[in-house]
Image (tube, rainbow over all chains, first blue to last red):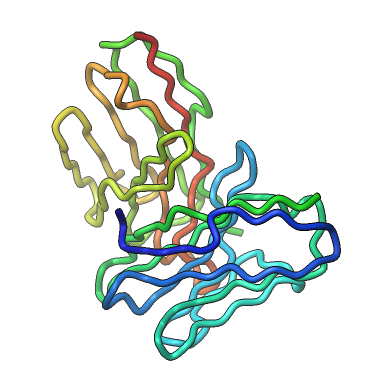
Length: 113
Length: 112
């Protein structure tokens, strides 16, 4: 158990819909990262937050947005969903001064039908 | 943009054989990390290398960071079925835009 909690584990929805994925980092970790992993694909970096502020942004679509709240949990919002958005979405956290060593949650499997 | 590549993409070995995966970056890395993802699981941190030419060992696993800090390798001696999974390298602080960019991974299958 990495200490990073992601909910829900599975999400099935239809095209055009909007969903919210939730992540609670390890206790004490200030950074939260979101990654997308499609079937047989690597881990695509989406966005990083540090202590409530956006730190870095990857190839995140405009239809996607994220935020980190004062209690450090984070949410990834995916809207106007398309079939191609079906993927495993991972959240990871890292400790301050931890050298970006990432601890991953178990992921949310999103299926867009 | 920044590219982190890994070869091979897939590797099938007989149990007891050695295995090596190579990671190459188009730019100099601040450090490199290796992760393992078991089938159906999530990536798990294995190790981080920071210094040029650094070599670290974890039991049967040997990790190297190149002198130019642009490449790295992971070598597993005498593979076991528990080694099955995908091994990812990840580069840190590559550009001001990208953060912890992962390579595409090498999927290892071990035939008992």
